[in-house]
Length: 250
Ligand SMILES: [Mg+2]
Image 1: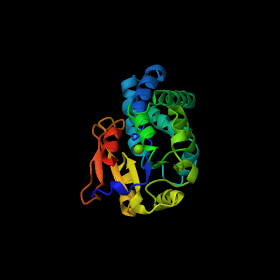
Image 2: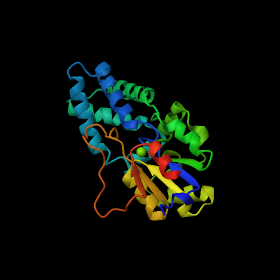
Image 3: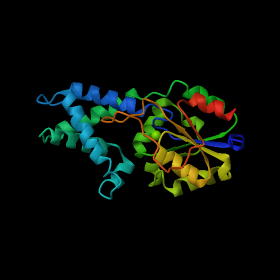
Image 4: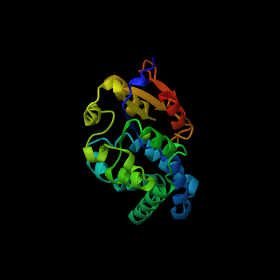
């Protein structure tokens, strides 16, 4: 028995589970640096500096210096990454920081699209299951993404790190999610692309976990998808599309 026959509620992650975040981000970065890089730095160089800055800044976002601002709005992070990319190019220019940050934020949102099977899959699953969303990130960015692709009506609850003040993989978030439906752990399934944020905490709690791995799920500056760590929990299943998920549930 796989356990899928017991599932009554499904929580989805958002970024790179239902929509292509990194594809949109990388497209937007290229477009941004094409139109708004300083004259002395090529777009390719700026992308390199941005990626270098990103690798370091990612480790700092959850620190007290940055986290409270990050929860509220994506602007601080966008601008700080541009500030650091410019600094690596030897440039200090706050007007340029704002121009690059704003342009990137706007273009990333415009480039966001659902994976091509997402709407069909959500329409199908909502007939049989509770559907919810658990997503990390700033409140404004996450709400904007959900609105941009029009999926809000599918989900109740929608749990956003920026609104809760705490995010995955914290157990509190999964507590809250489970209690919202009054289901038992083995009746809840988590579907997500992040092994550490989605799959590990769900499996530890006794939920089922479907890890979704796509070739497009690669941040700027990286060349491959996340790999499974040694001695880690084993997902209930691993899939490469949402359509494959439907196959497991039927
Ligand atoms: Mg994700």
